[in-house]
Image (tube, rainbow, N blue to C red; front, side):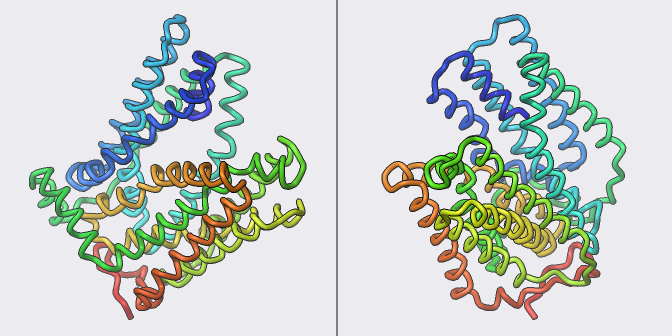
Length: 390
C-alpha cells in the first residue's frame, strides 16, 4: 500500500518520472546500508521488542505524512525523507520478523510456517495495491496513509500478545558483546560457512536475475501478445495465483526433513519457466509459464529460507537472515539491468538473457558444490543444531 500511495503522491506533486524512480530508490537504499546491522541487533536484543518499535515507528511516519498531505503542506523532500526512514525501519523489521517465525513455530513446523508466511505476503501483494487505489480514489492520499497508520497500530497490539520462547545462553552472551563485534561475527560466519554461502547465492541470484520479468509485463502484454492493460493484469494474476498455490502446497505437506534438492529443482524450473515465457507468442502459453514460474518461485524460496534458518544457530540467525533479505534491494537492481537490456535489445531478449543467467548461476553452484544437493536437516532436531551433510 505504501509503494502505491508514495508513488502516486510524488508523481502527483512533481509529474516527473525521474523523481518517481528516486522515491522508490529511497526506500531501497537503507536495506543495503543497514541490513547486516539490523540482523545483529535482532540477535542481540529482543526480536519481539524490535518488531514492536519498528511497527510503532511506521505508524508515526504514516501519520506525519498523512497530516502533511491533509494540511496541503507536503513537498517532495517530505516524501524522500519519510521514504528513507520507512526503508530504514523495514531494514530493522524484516530480520526480526523472519527469525520470530522460527522462534515461535520451532524447527518441526518451520517449513509449513514459512509457507503460510509466504501466502500472507503474496496475498498482501495482490490485495494491497488494489485496496490502496480504492482508498486514494475515495478518501484521498491522506486518508490512505491514516488507514496504514491504524493498521500498523493494530499489528502492534497483536505482536504484544505473542509468547516468545526463552533465549538460549548463547543468545544472552551475544547480547552482551559490542555491536561491531556482532556485525563482524555475522560476516565471518557467512563467509566461512560454505553451505550458508551456497544457500544465500541460491536465494539471491535466481531471484535477482529472473524475477524482474514481472516488471517487463507491459512490454509482453502490448508488444508481444498484442493486448493491453487487461492482459497485463491477467499475466500478473497468473503469476500471483501460482505463488499462492505453491505456498499452499508447501504449507500442507507434512515432513520430517528439509532437503536442499527440492530448493535447487525449484530454482531451475522457475528459471526455465521464465525463459519459455520470454519465447512465447501465444497468450495461453504465456499464462501457463507465468503460473508455473509463480509456483516454483515460492516453493524454492520457502525451502531455501527454511534451510537457512535451520542451518544457522539461533543466536546468529538474525544476521544470516539479514543477508537473505537483501533480495528486497537486489531485485530492483536486477530490474534496472533488465530495463537497460530491454532498451537496447527489446523486452523478450532481455528476459531471455536474464533467465539464462539465473539458470547458469544455479548450474555453477551445483558444479562447484555438488555436496550441497545432499544437504538434509532433520526437523525434529533441536532448533540450534547445525545442518549436516549426509
